[in-house]
Amino acid sequence: MLYRHKPGQLVKLSSYLYDRTDGSICALTDLIRESAIEAVMSAEEAITRKLMDRVEISEYAQDTYRNVVRQRRKTASTRTKAAS
Image (cartoon, rainbow, N blue to C red; front, side, top):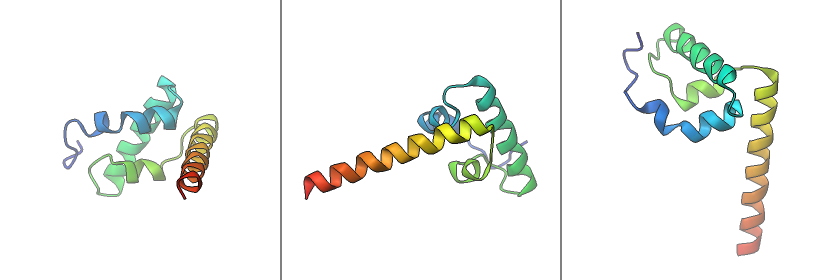
């Protein structure tokens, strides 16, 4: 049992979870399971985004998430330059 995990925490992270797993139910299951194990082993007792960022899942999902992050940074950078 994750004693510090609050109901609804994962719902608030739905966009992150989708991006991180590319919508794959298998990758999502792996991420949640591995995060729960990490939460117990580290005594954090809650699944948070910070904790999930430390958890590695399938290589495909990891690569896809890196591409999403890279694209968002590129878009943000372009917007910043356009606003200047």
